[in-house]
Amino acid sequence: MLMASSDKHRQTGKNRAFRQSLGHALEGLQALFHYERNFRKHLLFGSLAVIAGLILQLTINEWLWLMLAIFLVLIAETLNTIVEAVVDLVVGQTYHELAKRAKDVAAGGVLLAALFAVIVGALVMLPALGRWF
Ligand SMILES: Nc1ncnc2c1ncn2[C@@H]1O[C@H](COP(=O)(O)OP(=O)(O)OP(=O)(O)O)[C@@H](O)[C@H]1O
Image 1 (cartoon, rainbow, N blue to C red):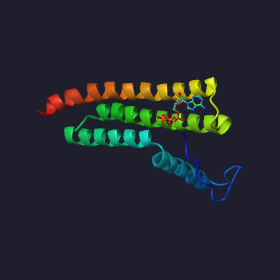
Image 2 (cartoon, protein in one colour; image 1 turned 90 degrees about the vertical axis):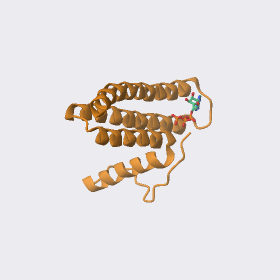
Image 3 (cartoon, rainbow, N blue to C red; image 1 turned 30 degrees about the vertical axis):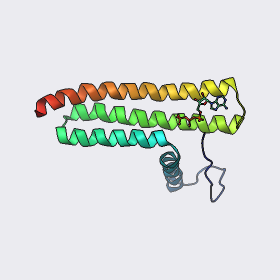
């Protein structure tokens, strides 16, 4: 369930300038961080992986895989949040089978991305740990 955020200017039309588009995109990231516990959790895991990568001195290829895995999870969280918001907007508190399917599928997408991140994490970190010791 998502919390509604207030739009100070109540804009419903198109953004007029790049700065305005960027501002709204940053507001979106702020909302993700503020309202989505799972997004914060994944951001924390991603940050820990980056710290581990710095300590283990990953190669450029290992960094690329790690960044792909981290951003994939965060983007999946973003899509999951969009689905939750739109479903809640459409059905509100009403139970609906399609609302359940949409939210469960969105959550499944996050799970797939998280599995990919665990696999990449293991494939990248284990050899790096081997080199470190
Ligand atoms: N309107 C609805 N109709 C039917 N099932 C729903 C509905 N809203 C939520 N659900 C079910 O409850 C689950 C949790 O929904 P909720 O909106 O609370 O997600 P959430 O806990 O915020 O998810 P996440 O853990 O991904 O942040 C959904 O995955 C779905 O199975």
